[in-house]
Amino acid sequence: MLVDEVKITIKAGNGGLGAVSFGKGPKSGPDGGNGGDGGNLYFKASSDLTLLEQFHPDQTVSAENGHNGGKDKMYGKKGADLEILVPIGSKVTDLNTKVVFEFNKAGDKALLCRGGTAGIGNFELRSSKITTPKFSTPPTPGQTREIEINLSFIADYGLIGLPSSGKSSLLNELTNAKAKTAEYHFTTLSPNLGVLPNKKIIADIPGLIEGASRGKGLGIKFLKHIQKVNLLLHCVSSDSTNPVSDYEIVRKELGKFNKSLLNKKELILLTKSDLMDEKGIKKIKSKLKDLNQEIISTSIHDESSLESLLKILQ
Ligand SMILES: Nc1nc2c(ncn2[C@@H]2O[C@H](COP(=O)(O)OP(=O)(O)OP(=O)(O)O)[C@@H](O)[C@H]2O)c(=O)[nH]1
Ligand SMILES: [Mg+2]
Image 1 (spheres, rainbow, N blue to C red):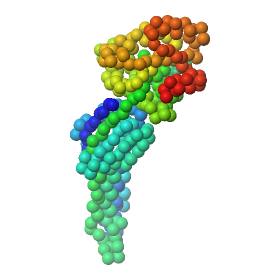
Image 2: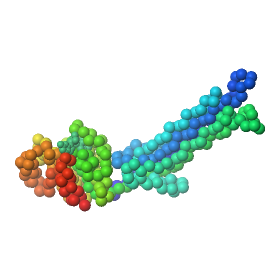
Image 3: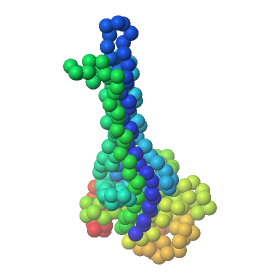
């Protein structure tokens, strides 16, 4: 189980001041406009696992304050709402009230701090009793919470492989994830999570290249997310010029992070098999066979290959 935690303060925007103002002419009365309400602060779950890294301990994150009202009945603008993305599996605890908010699937959203109410300007406060109010009502402050965010999840499967080997494409096909995919390297810059129909979790670990353990590219720090997986899904692209070397580069970096990763059960996915004819696939498989790992070919354009893989991931 991986646990990351951080303590921060969150705050909704304060309400803006209502204006106290009077028109210029002898007959003109109060014309102070209302302030704007403060922005609300929401939390929303996303499949990006590294989002907690955006916070620094003891930091305060605030939504925008409402703007003040003005003369000539000018209303203040509402403060903008703030939506903070946190990784799926995050649990937010209010350290004072002990109220807990959980974010278990992508898109889960909750209002954590309500924006303050705006002050009313003296124009709207006119009444039959007080025709020329010389005051406005005070705005209220935005809600504040001191919180602890805990991220804990257990990835059941880890997708690894060189850049562009088709990891994120497979994640999207097998799970509810919507990771970005593209033909260039390092499309994915931080690990993505996907949840299988059977609720098991796959983590897509990007950035493994030769020298990653020496800090090249994205480094190997993301491997901490798959230390406890039951099975590594090692993607090797079938259009590679040297699939065996692709495989070995990644294994070397795994071992440098932690030797125990090398003892994990592993399945080689010979990806993009639609780009190769059967003879070509056989040839690559026979080259990879010496590695003594189980190999299956997959393609995002071949439904039956995805179904076979899903069966293995039961
Ligand atoms: N023809 C074919 N193309 C594929 C297949 N899987 C992925 N691709 C393409 O290969 C390219 C790389 O795929 P990604 O899923 O982004 O690869 P990745 O391993 O996540 O790459 P990084 O995020 O850069 O590490 C994209 O242009 C995909 O459309 C497949 O089964 N067949
Ligand atoms: Mg990717």
